[in-house]
Every structure is written in structure tokens, then in C-alpha cells.
Amino acid sequence: MLKPETQLTRINRHKKLVDEVVTSLSTYILEGLIDGTLHGGDKMPNERELSEILGIGRSTLREAVQVLSILNLLDVRPGQGTFIADEHSEFNAAPFSWGLILRKNSFTELIESRIFLEQECVRLASLRATEQEYAKLERAYREMEQALENEDTGQLVSADVEFHLVIAHSAHNSVLYEMLRTIRTLMQIWISKAMEDSRSLKPTISEHKLIFEAMLNRNGELAARYMGSHIQSASERLMGVLSQRK
Image (cartoon, rainbow, N blue to C red; front, top):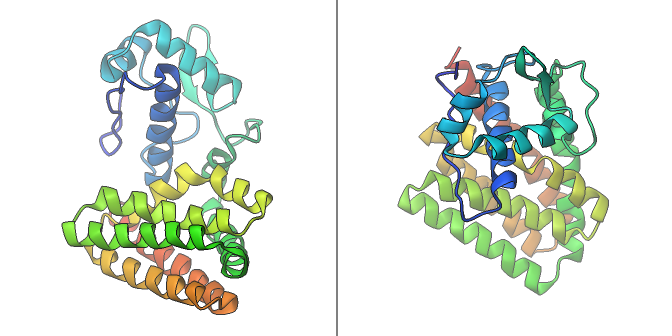
């Protein structure tokens, strides 16, 4: 049975079908794990139900489930069904973000990790970013402003994630960039959940403006301080949203 707070969406057949199914299933389960509506060890809907919900054939679904099983994200048990992997599973490096969600105290650890990674990224990016990269960063920030004006939360979330990834790329440190890119889906879900409270929108824009202006002045230390404050504030807004659901 599907949990009420988490929903699967029909697949866009214009994209690579199996990849799209893998993304859809991963996002559905990550959202459920964050909300607390799903847990490691929960049984997934059966093959027929999932195929109907996603609007795809069973053979395509089996391929996607096989991919997630190889990554040790899903546990396929013959004769019993398909289950979400529990916290004791041996995760491969690719689904790093999944492992973070399943472990106890993972949310606090994720906040600490994001602050550490993104503060260093913005510190380096303030010194190393090219004019083209600053233009991309400004474009992402302007899109956030436009989204706020249009009251388009989806666009705001997308531009917010892009803002952070542009900074990570502009640090010109491939290790830092790949570490942040690895948790991109988790970041997007985190940001979208926090913005379910409309009171989060304006503070989010203000916090990004401070980061952006400090970077324009090539003040890495100030930008890092603003980044740490932003992530801490955003995490508190997210906790406020999640606590209302319990």
C-alpha cells in the first residue's frame, strides 16, 4: 500500500524510460524516509500496482528494480516481494544519500556535512570563480527572485539547488563538487520540504542574496559565514515543517 503523504508520478516517456523509473522510485522512497512515512524494511507495492501507477510495462519496471537492487537500495525477496533496504544493508558509493537517510542521527550529521562542504566550496569559489560562472550564479539567483514573485515554489526549489551546485562547480575542486552532486536529490527534497511553509520563501531569498553579494566582493570568509548561517536556518525551517506532520 502507498503511504498517504508520498506519491509516485507517471513517467515521461520522452526520456530514457528505465532511468526515469529509477529516478521516480528513488525520489518517492527518499521523500517517504525523510517524512517518516516510509522506513527501511517496508514492503513496496506489488509489480502490477507499481506498473499501473507509473504507466509503464512490467518488463521496464523489472529492469528499474534490478538496478536499484544491484545498488542495494531495494531488497528483492523471491516469493515475498520487494522491500526498501534497511540500515544494515551494504550500500555502494553511488547511493550515498540513501545511506544517510536510513541511519540514526543522520539528519544532524547531514547538516554538519553540508555546512562543512558548502562553506569550503563558497570560500574557494569566491576566489576562483570565472566571470562566466558568476554570470551563471547571478542567473540562478535572479530565477529565485522571479520564482518568489510568481509564487512558483517548484521553480524556486530548482533555482535554489542550481545556485548551490554552481558554487560547488566554481570552487574548481572536483572532489568537493562530486560530493555535493552525490546528494543533489537529497538536497532538492530537503529544500522543497522546507519551502512547504510559505514563510520560508522570503528568508531563503534574503540569505542567498547575502551569499551572492559577499562572493561578488570576493570575500570568501564572509560568504562562508553566510552560507553556514543559511544552511542552519534552512534546516530549522525544515524541522519545523516535519514536526507539524507528526
